[in-house]
Length: 221
Image 1 (cartoon, rainbow, N blue to C red):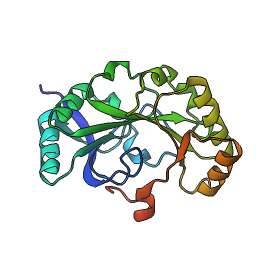
Image 2 (image 1 turned 30 degrees about the horizontal axis):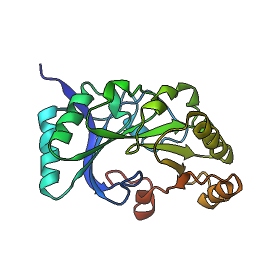
Image 3 (image 1 turned 45 degrees about the vertical axis):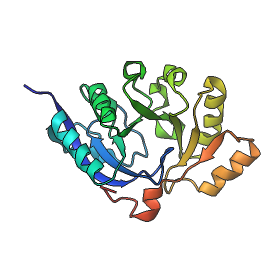
Image 4 (image 1 turned 180 degrees about the vertical axis):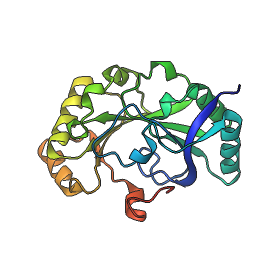
C-alpha cells in the first residue's frame, strides 16, 4: 500500500512570519503534534482526533505543481508538527527538486539531524516557559541550524523574553533570531522595551502578519 500523509488543509496565502514573511506561499498543514502548548493557535490540527485527508506524495506534488503554475515559489510545511509525518524528508527533497523553496516549521521537539540535506530550510521554535513545553526542547538542534534557518521564540510573557535572551547566549545559534508575541497575551511594545533595556540587538521582533490582515481565528489564511 502506498504511504500517505495526514493533510489537514492546504491553501495559498502569504507567509505570516519567518525570513520570507509577506511572500506568497503554498501551505501544507499536516495533522498531529507531539506537544500541547498552552497558547497553541492551531490546536484543532494537533490532537489524535484532528481532521485530515490521507493523501499520497503524488497528490501533494500535484498540489505544489498547481501552485507553482500560479506563480508561487514557496512551500511551507506546517502543522501540527510536519516532521512527524512518514517520509517527510523524501517529500521535502521532491518539492525542492521542483525548484520550490521549501520551509519546514518545526516545534523544536523533533531532532533535525535526520533532515539535513533535504533541501528545506527550518523555522524552529524554542518553546519558552509560558508554553508549558520547554522541557521537551531538543537543544542539540541549535548546532545544526545554518544562516538560512530561523529560530522563533514565541513570547507570551515578559519572562519569556528574558528566557529567550538566556537561551540565545547559551547556544549561540548561527541564524536569525525572532521574537514573536503570542497574539493577545503580551503587548509587542513591551517586548521592544525589554529589547532596548537588555541590549538584545541580535533579535528581531516579528508580528504574525496574517493575524492583523484577517480574523486571528481564521483558517486557511
